[in-house]
Amino acid sequence: MRAAKVKFDAIVVVCAKCAKRQGFAKRDFCRSLKQAFRRDTRGRKIKVVESGCFGPCPKRLVAVATPASMSRRRVVLLNPGLISSEIQGLLPDLGVVTAPISSAANPGSGA
Image (cartoon, rainbow, N blue to C red; front, side, top):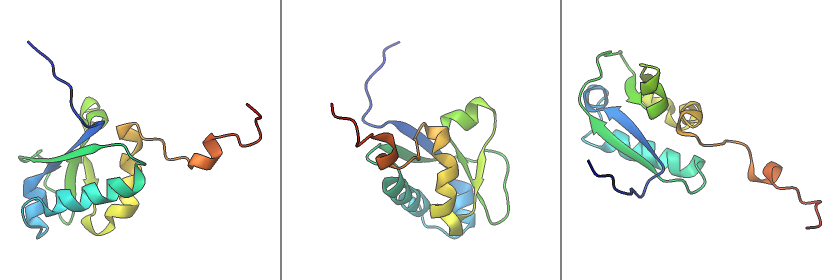
């Protein structure tokens, strides 16, 4: 077995069947999810891909899986109308710190 480098930091898998049931064209939900990640992840590259059905078929929601949720044997159910607000709940699963940059740096240090 061989391994290769990838150019992304995390991966999010979206159920294509759920996205289609919500009226999204092929890959439109993935694109909107990726745009929301770009606004909130400060340069981290998140790969968003579609897959087959995960099993739970919720009404008015889209099933999404992250590596952390899959390790817990869970999927995340997102409301497609609230993508930008619900994206904050996925960021810790992807290892993205959501604290403001200014609080991380200490401007008073004279280094």
